[in-house]
Image (cartoon, rainbow, N blue to C red):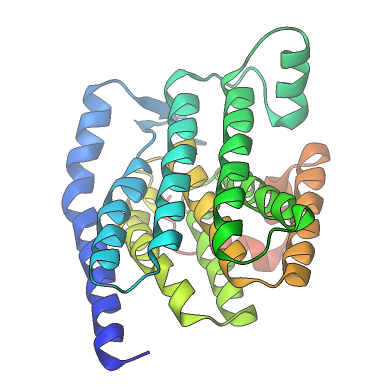
Length: 282
């Protein structure tokens, strides 16, 4: 990577960060004025779906990166379309959903009885978007293997839901994204593909202080976007074998979440609890 390219990547990241810091107070005021608030874990009503800022701001700066020839156009396009799809599905759940049903089993039982919950809609639409993404990128990754295509689609869909599973306390979903991105960077170092995440990471860092101080709730809108982006990054960077290992880990996480509380697991672990509490203002 040339010095010019590195400087431009840093400039886009800084632009994304400061754009969020400038726009977020106005977005929160708009959400509050529109009545789009929910009680958080303490019972305080705060603006929800504030994670929309993590979709809108990086969208512009990633497009700018394509114009500057910093990113592969097909990767940027597929990522942006995926983020839009999962952001839309998350908004439906944030704006129209209720919490009468929870978990994949709960939404599946409701669907079998003839009720389409917003959670089930999100799962169906998100799954379709993930498969469309996998089909599109297969053309450019020179891998038309059906098994790999299905694996990539599942990685994206389950990654989106995985980040959402952790979005129960201030800042937690954002930290999962940061640690997940760091793990991908270490396992499959690929500067040209990891840098595509810089505007998203910078936007998240600009947003997180509001989330960790309980002034904003990311909602499914934000957590789904972050999870889908993380899944897309995994598809772009991991080998089929590494992708299979990741998929098995994601399946294990979802099975665990169906039968026990991830929140309890975190609270009962000294290390995980310390990481979870870091930066939070309660």
